[in-house]
Length: 230
Image 1 (tube, rainbow, N blue to C red):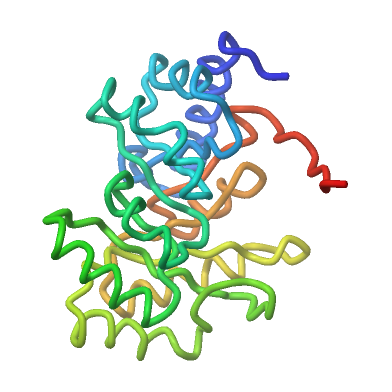
Image 2 (image 1 turned 180 degrees about the vertical axis):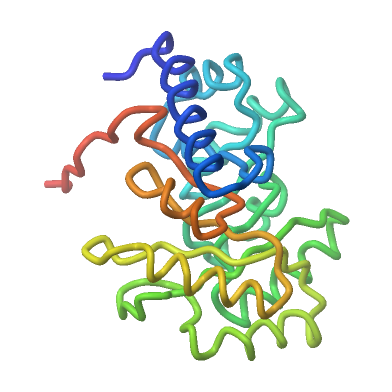
């Protein structure tokens, strides 16, 4: 189990990998932001990461954000939080109140609700559209063939602050194709933010232009295995 004292060492190792991948790709390290994925991890480990200099985190579930982050953000107001999991409309108010970036915009009803909530609260969050690059039926995200039209709707019909795109490639496929596809879709739509790459493949994502890499296991250790309720 990862301890609080391991976090700084793990973070340094991940940042060294980012530095090397950036150099090999002919990119500047500062063009790549590390999003530390802290889902299922307790607040003390998150605080250890903050103490080690990490400022950007990602959570998968709004309920977990509610449980952990109000106190952390009150203590560390410069820390930024990304929601990287699916967002249901009944959790949208809390997501807008507590998060800074929504990475999983994937349907028009959610776009409408996000715009309305941001207008009501005066909070403007960067939004990323999730693309289902593998066209997996069980996975959320806009299909590649529909992305241009969907982005046009987000921008022209709703004025959603779309900053970029994100994807999660199929776990059993070479991710390079999916990274290249996402980067091309972002390029042709004039989007600067490309969120792709996790612990096992973020070096490849950096080669294809990732501006944000989402790393959890290499920083916080493996998550406990899922145990179904009896």
